[in-house]
Length: 308
Image (cartoon, rainbow, N blue to C red; front, side):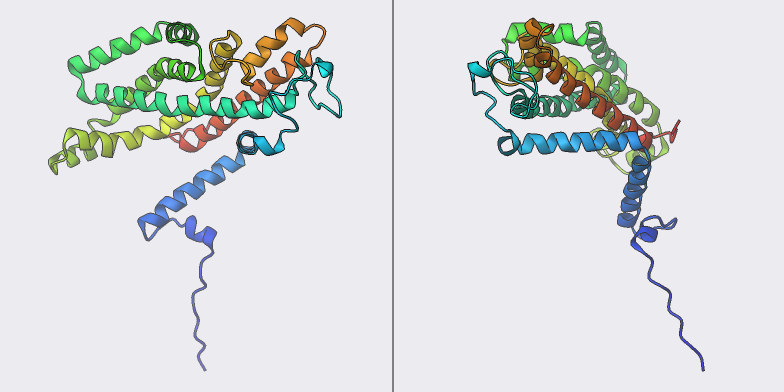
Protein backbone atom coordinates (compact mmCIF):
# COMPACT_ATOMS: atom_id res chain seq x y z
CA UNK A 1 0.00 0.00 0.00
CA UNK A 2 1.61 3.22 -1.13
CA UNK A 3 1.42 6.31 1.00
CA UNK A 4 1.12 9.69 -0.65
CA UNK A 5 3.65 12.22 0.53
CA UNK A 6 2.94 15.93 0.34
CA UNK A 7 5.61 18.61 0.52
CA UNK A 8 5.30 20.57 3.74
CA UNK A 9 4.30 24.18 3.34
CA UNK A 10 7.38 26.38 3.92
CA UNK A 11 7.24 28.69 6.91
CA UNK A 12 7.01 32.43 6.41
CA UNK A 13 10.67 32.81 7.42
CA UNK A 14 11.81 30.17 4.92
CA UNK A 15 9.68 31.80 2.23
CA UNK A 16 11.30 35.18 2.89
CA UNK A 17 14.83 33.77 3.03
CA UNK A 18 14.48 31.62 -0.07
CA UNK A 19 17.52 31.65 -2.37
CA UNK A 20 15.25 31.29 -5.41
CA UNK A 21 12.32 33.74 -5.05
CA UNK A 22 9.44 32.98 -7.37
CA UNK A 23 8.08 36.50 -7.73
CA UNK A 24 9.38 40.03 -7.59
CA UNK A 25 7.27 40.64 -4.48
CA UNK A 26 8.91 37.71 -2.72
CA UNK A 27 12.36 39.01 -3.67
CA UNK A 28 11.61 42.49 -2.33
CA UNK A 29 10.08 41.23 0.91
CA UNK A 30 13.00 38.86 1.34
CA UNK A 31 15.51 41.68 0.91
CA UNK A 32 13.62 43.79 3.47
CA UNK A 33 13.53 40.90 5.93
CA UNK A 34 17.24 40.19 5.51
CA UNK A 35 17.94 43.86 6.09
CA UNK A 36 15.83 43.78 9.25
CA UNK A 37 17.74 40.76 10.52
CA UNK A 38 21.03 42.57 9.92
CA UNK A 39 19.74 45.69 11.66
CA UNK A 40 18.30 43.72 14.58
CA UNK A 41 21.66 42.04 15.16
CA UNK A 42 23.13 45.47 15.96
CA UNK A 43 22.11 45.98 19.59
CA UNK A 44 23.18 49.61 19.70
CA UNK A 45 21.19 50.39 16.57
CA UNK A 46 18.14 48.76 18.14
CA UNK A 47 18.67 50.90 21.24
CA UNK A 48 18.72 54.01 19.05
CA UNK A 49 15.56 52.89 17.28
CA UNK A 50 13.78 52.29 20.60
CA UNK A 51 14.76 55.73 21.88
CA UNK A 52 13.47 57.39 18.70
CA UNK A 53 10.21 55.43 18.84
CA UNK A 54 9.76 56.62 22.42
CA UNK A 55 10.52 60.18 21.30
CA UNK A 56 7.91 60.02 18.54
CA UNK A 57 5.38 58.52 20.94
CA UNK A 58 6.14 61.24 23.48
CA UNK A 59 5.65 63.95 20.85
CA UNK A 60 2.35 62.47 19.64
CA UNK A 61 0.95 61.98 23.14
CA UNK A 62 2.42 65.17 24.64
CA UNK A 63 -0.92 66.78 25.64
CA UNK A 64 -1.94 63.64 27.52
CA UNK A 65 1.30 62.52 29.18
CA UNK A 66 2.72 65.91 30.20
CA UNK A 67 2.00 66.35 33.92
CA UNK A 68 1.43 70.11 33.60
CA UNK A 69 1.05 72.80 30.99
CA UNK A 70 4.42 73.79 29.51
CA UNK A 71 3.43 77.45 29.75
CA UNK A 72 1.91 77.53 33.26
CA UNK A 73 3.98 79.84 35.49
CA UNK A 74 4.02 79.36 39.26
CA UNK A 75 6.51 81.80 40.72
CA UNK A 76 6.15 80.27 44.18
CA UNK A 77 7.68 77.06 42.76
CA UNK A 78 10.49 78.68 40.77
CA UNK A 79 13.85 76.90 40.60
CA UNK A 80 12.65 73.87 42.53
CA UNK A 81 15.01 70.84 42.34
CA UNK A 82 13.81 67.49 40.98
CA UNK A 83 11.19 66.01 43.31
CA UNK A 84 8.05 63.92 43.33
CA UNK A 85 6.01 66.99 42.39
CA UNK A 86 8.35 68.03 39.58
CA UNK A 87 10.41 65.08 38.37
CA UNK A 88 12.97 67.24 36.55
CA UNK A 89 12.54 70.40 38.60
CA UNK A 90 11.24 73.81 37.57
CA UNK A 91 12.76 76.78 35.76
CA UNK A 92 13.09 80.44 36.71
CA UNK A 93 9.38 81.06 36.07
CA UNK A 94 8.17 77.98 37.96
CA UNK A 95 7.34 76.02 34.82
CA UNK A 96 7.65 72.24 34.96
CA UNK A 97 10.78 71.24 33.02
CA UNK A 98 9.53 67.72 32.25
CA UNK A 99 6.36 69.09 30.67
CA UNK A 100 8.36 71.56 28.61
CA UNK A 101 10.73 68.83 27.43
CA UNK A 102 7.81 66.62 26.40
CA UNK A 103 6.16 69.39 24.39
CA UNK A 104 9.55 70.54 23.09
CA UNK A 105 10.04 67.14 21.46
CA UNK A 106 7.37 68.18 18.96
CA UNK A 107 9.41 71.20 17.92
CA UNK A 108 12.57 69.12 17.66
CA UNK A 109 10.91 66.47 15.49
CA UNK A 110 9.30 69.13 13.30
CA UNK A 111 12.64 70.85 12.64
CA UNK A 112 14.57 67.62 12.10
CA UNK A 113 11.87 66.02 9.95
CA UNK A 114 11.38 69.06 7.73
CA UNK A 115 15.10 69.65 7.18
CA UNK A 116 15.67 65.92 6.57
CA UNK A 117 12.93 66.01 3.92
CA UNK A 118 13.95 69.19 2.10
CA UNK A 119 17.76 69.10 2.09
CA UNK A 120 18.25 65.58 0.64
CA UNK A 121 15.73 66.25 -2.13
CA UNK A 122 17.57 69.43 -3.14
CA UNK A 123 20.91 67.65 -2.94
CA UNK A 124 19.66 64.61 -4.86
CA UNK A 125 18.32 66.75 -7.69
CA UNK A 126 21.39 68.99 -8.01
CA UNK A 127 23.90 66.15 -7.60
CA UNK A 128 22.31 63.75 -10.07
CA UNK A 129 21.73 66.45 -12.68
CA UNK A 130 25.34 67.56 -12.38
CA UNK A 131 26.74 64.04 -12.59
CA UNK A 132 24.46 62.91 -15.39
CA UNK A 133 24.73 66.03 -17.57
CA UNK A 134 28.44 66.68 -17.11
CA UNK A 135 30.22 69.53 -18.91
CA UNK A 136 29.43 73.12 -18.03
CA UNK A 137 26.28 72.07 -16.12
CA UNK A 138 28.36 69.93 -13.81
CA UNK A 139 30.98 72.63 -13.37
CA UNK A 140 28.43 75.35 -12.62
CA UNK A 141 26.39 73.35 -10.12
CA UNK A 142 29.48 72.05 -8.31
CA UNK A 143 31.00 75.53 -8.00
CA UNK A 144 27.75 76.70 -6.37
CA UNK A 145 27.98 73.69 -4.07
CA UNK A 146 31.59 74.57 -3.23
CA UNK A 147 30.54 78.10 -2.28
CA UNK A 148 28.05 76.72 0.24
CA UNK A 149 30.58 74.20 1.54
CA UNK A 150 33.15 76.96 2.08
CA UNK A 151 31.15 78.34 5.01
CA UNK A 152 30.46 76.50 8.28
CA UNK A 153 26.83 75.39 8.26
CA UNK A 154 25.90 77.05 11.54
CA UNK A 155 27.50 80.37 10.57
CA UNK A 156 25.70 80.33 7.23
CA UNK A 157 22.43 79.42 8.95
CA UNK A 158 22.92 82.31 11.37
CA UNK A 159 23.33 84.66 8.43
CA UNK A 160 20.14 83.42 6.77
CA UNK A 161 18.08 83.63 9.97
CA UNK A 162 19.46 87.06 10.80
CA UNK A 163 18.38 88.25 7.35
CA UNK A 164 14.96 86.56 7.40
CA UNK A 165 14.11 87.14 11.06
CA UNK A 166 14.01 84.79 14.07
CA UNK A 167 11.30 82.11 13.92
CA UNK A 168 10.94 78.34 13.64
CA UNK A 169 10.02 78.52 9.96
CA UNK A 170 13.02 80.65 9.09
CA UNK A 171 15.30 78.42 11.16
CA UNK A 172 14.08 75.37 9.24
CA UNK A 173 14.57 77.15 5.92
CA UNK A 174 18.07 78.27 6.89
CA UNK A 175 19.11 74.78 8.02
CA UNK A 176 17.71 73.22 4.84
CA UNK A 177 19.54 75.74 2.63
CA UNK A 178 22.83 75.01 4.37
CA UNK A 179 22.47 71.21 4.66
CA UNK A 180 22.02 70.18 1.02
CA UNK A 181 25.63 70.46 -0.38
CA UNK A 182 26.96 67.17 1.15
CA UNK A 183 23.97 65.31 -0.32
CA UNK A 184 24.64 66.87 -3.71
CA UNK A 185 28.26 65.73 -3.58
CA UNK A 186 27.23 62.22 -2.59
CA UNK A 187 24.53 61.98 -5.28
CA UNK A 188 26.95 63.26 -7.93
CA UNK A 189 29.56 60.67 -6.96
CA UNK A 190 26.97 57.88 -7.15
CA UNK A 191 25.75 59.15 -10.52
CA UNK A 192 29.24 59.28 -12.00
CA UNK A 193 29.78 55.61 -11.14
CA UNK A 194 26.57 54.36 -12.77
CA UNK A 195 25.82 56.73 -15.67
CA UNK A 196 27.85 54.59 -18.10
CA UNK A 197 26.60 51.26 -16.74
CA UNK A 198 25.22 48.67 -19.16
CA UNK A 199 21.66 48.91 -17.88
CA UNK A 200 21.68 52.67 -18.49
CA UNK A 201 22.87 52.09 -22.06
CA UNK A 202 20.21 49.42 -22.53
CA UNK A 203 17.47 51.72 -21.27
CA UNK A 204 18.70 54.47 -23.57
CA UNK A 205 18.58 52.09 -26.55
CA UNK A 206 14.99 51.27 -25.66
CA UNK A 207 14.08 54.92 -26.06
CA UNK A 208 14.28 56.19 -22.48
CA UNK A 209 14.86 59.93 -22.32
CA UNK A 210 17.16 61.74 -19.94
CA UNK A 211 14.43 62.56 -17.45
CA UNK A 212 13.26 58.95 -17.36
CA UNK A 213 16.81 57.68 -16.93
CA UNK A 214 17.39 60.15 -14.13
CA UNK A 215 14.19 59.49 -12.20
CA UNK A 216 13.62 55.84 -12.97
CA UNK A 217 17.14 54.43 -12.94
CA UNK A 218 19.61 56.76 -11.23
CA UNK A 219 17.60 58.21 -8.35
CA UNK A 220 16.61 54.81 -6.88
CA UNK A 221 20.27 53.76 -6.74
CA UNK A 222 21.27 56.96 -4.93
CA UNK A 223 18.53 56.90 -2.31
CA UNK A 224 20.04 54.22 -0.05
CA UNK A 225 23.29 56.18 0.37
CA UNK A 226 21.34 59.36 1.03
CA UNK A 227 19.20 57.65 3.69
CA UNK A 228 22.33 56.58 5.57
CA UNK A 229 23.82 60.07 5.29
CA UNK A 230 20.56 61.67 6.49
CA UNK A 231 20.37 59.38 9.53
CA UNK A 232 23.97 60.20 10.44
CA UNK A 233 23.36 63.94 9.93
CA UNK A 234 20.29 64.06 12.18
CA UNK A 235 22.42 64.72 15.25
CA UNK A 236 24.09 67.66 13.53
CA UNK A 237 20.71 69.07 12.52
CA UNK A 238 19.47 68.81 16.11
CA UNK A 239 22.58 70.55 17.42
CA UNK A 240 22.33 73.29 14.78
CA UNK A 241 18.65 73.85 15.59
CA UNK A 242 19.46 73.94 19.32
CA UNK A 243 22.28 76.40 18.58
CA UNK A 244 19.89 78.74 16.77
CA UNK A 245 17.43 78.44 19.65
CA UNK A 246 20.21 79.08 22.17
CA UNK A 247 21.12 82.30 20.37
CA UNK A 248 17.48 83.40 20.23
CA UNK A 249 17.16 82.96 16.46
CA UNK A 250 14.98 79.84 16.46
CA UNK A 251 11.77 79.20 18.35
CA UNK A 252 10.69 82.28 20.25
CA UNK A 253 9.46 82.40 23.89
CA UNK A 254 7.42 80.93 25.40
CA UNK A 255 7.79 77.92 23.06
CA UNK A 256 9.62 75.08 24.86
CA UNK A 257 12.45 74.58 22.37
CA UNK A 258 15.33 72.65 23.93
CA UNK A 259 18.10 75.03 22.84
CA UNK A 260 16.16 78.03 24.12
CA UNK A 261 15.62 76.21 27.43
CA UNK A 262 19.39 75.79 27.80
CA UNK A 263 19.83 79.48 27.07
CA UNK A 264 17.27 80.35 29.76
CA UNK A 265 19.07 78.17 32.30
CA UNK A 266 22.67 79.27 31.66
CA UNK A 267 22.35 82.12 34.21
CA UNK A 268 21.53 79.58 36.94
CA UNK A 269 23.80 76.70 35.91
CA UNK A 270 26.11 76.92 38.94
CA UNK A 271 23.39 76.95 41.62
CA UNK A 272 20.43 75.38 39.82
CA UNK A 273 22.09 72.96 37.42
CA UNK A 274 18.95 71.08 36.40
CA UNK A 275 17.46 74.06 34.52
CA UNK A 276 20.08 73.79 31.75
CA UNK A 277 21.23 70.20 32.31
CA UNK A 278 17.87 68.51 31.63
CA UNK A 279 17.30 69.93 28.12
CA UNK A 280 21.00 69.37 27.42
CA UNK A 281 20.62 65.73 28.42
CA UNK A 282 17.59 65.44 26.14
CA UNK A 283 19.56 66.81 23.17
CA UNK A 284 22.45 64.45 23.93
CA UNK A 285 20.16 61.41 24.18
CA UNK A 286 18.31 62.08 20.94
CA UNK A 287 21.51 62.93 19.06
CA UNK A 288 23.14 59.72 20.26
CA UNK A 289 20.06 57.72 19.25
CA UNK A 290 20.20 59.12 15.71
CA UNK A 291 23.91 58.30 15.46
CA UNK A 292 23.31 54.71 16.60
CA UNK A 293 20.42 54.39 14.14
CA UNK A 294 22.59 55.74 11.34
CA UNK A 295 25.31 53.19 12.06
CA UNK A 296 22.75 50.40 11.87
CA UNK A 297 21.29 51.69 8.62
CA UNK A 298 24.78 51.95 7.15
CA UNK A 299 25.32 48.24 7.82
CA UNK A 300 22.02 47.41 6.10
CA UNK A 301 22.11 49.80 3.15
CA UNK A 302 25.82 49.84 2.35
CA UNK A 303 25.76 49.28 -1.44
CA UNK A 304 29.23 47.73 -1.40
CA UNK A 305 28.27 45.24 1.29
CA UNK A 306 31.09 46.35 3.57
CA UNK A 307 29.91 45.61 7.07
CA UNK A 308 33.14 46.45 8.83
